[in-house]
Image (cartoon, rainbow, N blue to C red; front, side, top):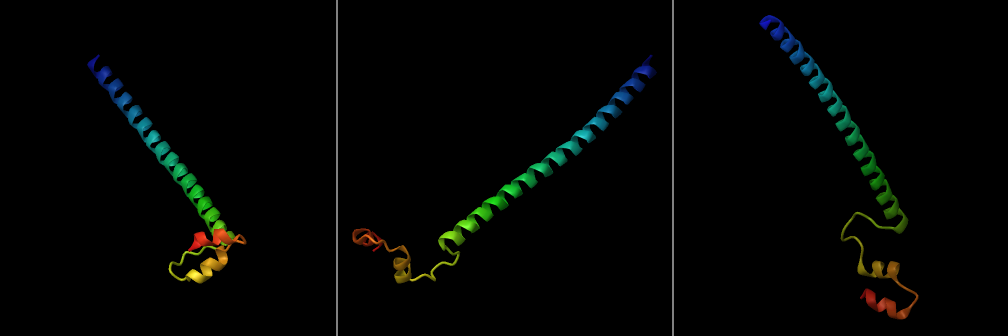
Length: 86
């Protein structure tokens, strides 16, 4: 009887370890899927931002735009709105 109990316990422990290994593999696969999805979303945001910058003429460089060129680009046909730029 004791020998049978030990054999059953050994078989159960072996089955449990196998199931744990399967679950670990599943977790790794799910984590990779999630990371891939996040990368795709991030790249789509970057593409959207790049398109926005191209469309509206923004640049990444800082300090290269003079105030005069900024005013020329942002100038409004309405006289009083141009006072807000200064």
